[in-house]
Image 1 (cartoon, one colour):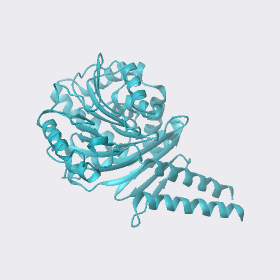
Image 2 (image 1 turned 45 degrees about the vertical axis):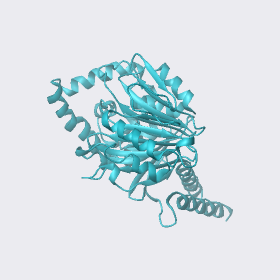
Image 3 (image 1 turned 90 degrees about the vertical axis):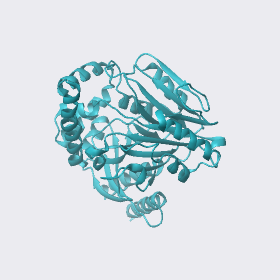
Length: 392
């Protein structure tokens, strides 16, 4: 009787967490559970949420078994469809180039990520080669990122937006999801990502550290940690902006990338880096490659998009909240290839996000909201209640 009472209490707590996350008229529906007890798939507000926990092998197997069909779709699109186009455009056979990339990054990739990737591939019914190549696919993102705080925002808190512009027309968005990783002995974190992808380009961890990436040039500098896995390593090991910068400095890094980083202490930074050098921009710091940067602001973008982003930020300075930020990053700051957008609040662990539709850009789609702390609690409460029921 006492055990049944404890289980009932846990279930009530889970329902309360769900209500806080989605609002009074929304609920998170658990639609899949990993039989081994290391993952959940949920649906809320029309979005898919994956939560995995445990060792690298356990997390990989959980994602692969729960999302096998979506994983296979993503690998097919990135490796075979995009790979064929890449072969034609570059004049180099895609599989040969991917083999070279794997050989060159191999010595630098943390071994735990290789174990997770291979376990995911086995569980999803994907070859080890395709699983690895899909996670090493050369990133060619042309994006924008901005973080604001203090005098720039309505209430002084940090708001950090990232705009991902990347080949929307091959329907990668059909594999889009929120991924929550709870690795043993490391920081829990979430990614606005894609099924089968164990790295990240848009992320925030439980310590209140958020990062968004923007792509540059320098393709071919593969002797380092691939960008998406470097960001994951930062999520799992760093607690704040300064710790993240130290991991970036130590690298080794690969090609040219740009980043906007923020944390719950209201520290923020922009980073421009390649395999050989790294520049850090602090809030309000001006740079000849950027348009005027407002006070308490970090921004990274390119061309006319950067000029318009700067203009919108100046016009909204002191009044920026989430709805205003959603307007600021709309077209043409976002490109016609806008695949997803995210707005982080590191102080509350909230993320507002939108994915592209089949024929619409992400910035024109409705935004959903999730809270990392509540998703972690939901998983742990569900895991505890399942274990308690098994003991009955």
